[in-house]
Amino acid sequence: MAPPTARIDLHTHSTASDGTLSPAELVRSAAGAGLDVVAITDHDTTAGWAPAVAALPAGLSLVRGAELSCRWHGEVPAAPLHLLAYLFDPAEPELSAELARVRAARLTRAERTVELLRADGVEVSWAEVLAGAAGGTVGRPHLAQALIRAGLVATTTEAFGARWLGERYRLPKEDIDVFRAVALVRAAGGVPVFAHPRATRRGRTVPDTLIAELAAAGLAGLEADHEDHSPAERAHVRGLAAELGLLVTGASDFHGTHKTVRLGAFTTDPQAYERIVADGVTPVASG
Ligand code: AMP
Ligand code: FE
Ligand code: FE
Ligand code: ZN
Image (cartoon, rainbow, N blue to C red; front, top):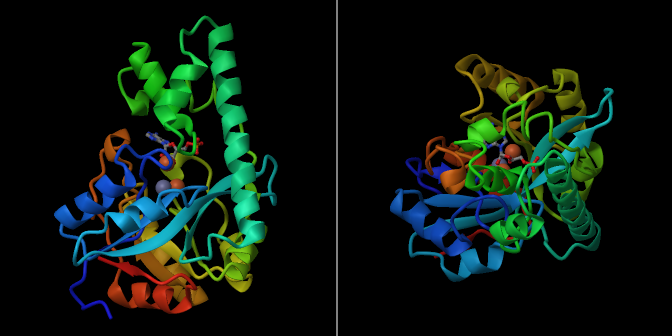
């Protein structure tokens, strides 16, 4: 059982996707930041799990998870959204096949984005973007780094502006239908939590009616405390979770130097954490 004072951060990224710390560095930094529990939740992959477990410092518990790229087809165009999945069986064939499909589609999408940029005379190379991703799930942050290296933008935030990866050079991903994702995560013994569901500053958000439908379909929780939520949005998410009987999490969504947020900037209540642990098929790893 986690003590009532435990510091629990349930959403972080490593170099297995678009973070800048290796899984081993991530768990060491989490211990250094005074966390008792950290979740590794790379985009569409479990590749960071084994190296994170192998490097787990004494006293730190690791929740193995992932952040799934999903889409809701109830609107036109379909809305992208992120589903955190905790403590699922990584060998479950349907879910792992879906993740492999999404990763492959991300590669094609990033390569096509490079082609679009190059067609407009922007000097970025596919080889360089691939090298930057270093075998991890490729995402727009890797393209942003290439734009920064080429001197076209100064910061990741600027690279995500409408002139660049936010709109003009933004291609859609081949995501997983969100209802299918919730079902697949549950079938793999995992616990699905909707990541930053009200983050209007990231773009379009989905209606509460969808969240109610997802709750009926097996969604376990909502991430309320996140840097992309305003205080009013956090309060709204808490209210909705209470209404629907969902658990509430808080987390940093740490990405190393690709973002400014620090490990442990937002945390999850031990009671909510215990509900996740009780429901997941993969045990929490302890250092
Ligand atoms: P992708 O999954 O390839 O579409 O890229 C989305 C990722 O880019 C998110 O997971 C964040 O890590 C990052 N991201 C999105 N918007 C921003 C932003 N405005 N500034 C910095 N990073 C961002
Ligand atoms: Fe990311
Ligand atoms: Fe996300
Ligand atoms: Zn994330």
